[in-house]
Length: 226
Image (cartoon, rainbow, N blue to C red; front, side, top):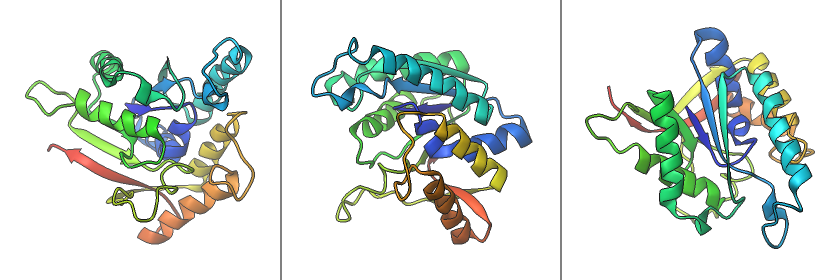
């Protein structure tokens, strides 16, 4: 199960990896998108004002899903870039519900030290929802970087993303990630923005070079119970 704050985070974090593990290994994959991802672009949250864009954003999720091939998605409407205005318990309850319905063995989610407050709260909620008790089905929790959020953390901050696991992917996987990302009309950007096609390809090459393969995505294993 993949738990993210916003539409597009599922692509930015592990789009190529999802494409690979689904295509090559048949891993059943469910994506949970907690926030609506739009309304922070106004001074105040106004769902009516952004009604048209929110509908387009939801449609874009479907196109991104087709590009990657993941099996199912649940979307929620927590306020964009305002997760800190919501009781953390409300977010935890959603994740617990999704977890109980899907029964995943592994969850991928945001790095807890991201600049984006919604990413931070998503990580905290996942960790709380997956407390390591005897009946817990989630044995592995893995975090990913989110370009234009993870790397913008202040250089003096100790909570930087330090990967300890890498998944080798192909150019085909990377191109699927880029195609999915380009489905998001309000999120795609031009180079040198981190969400641009060129930057996403460079990032995959960068992590590939770090571990001796052409392309890779980087992760941090937070918990793994064998």
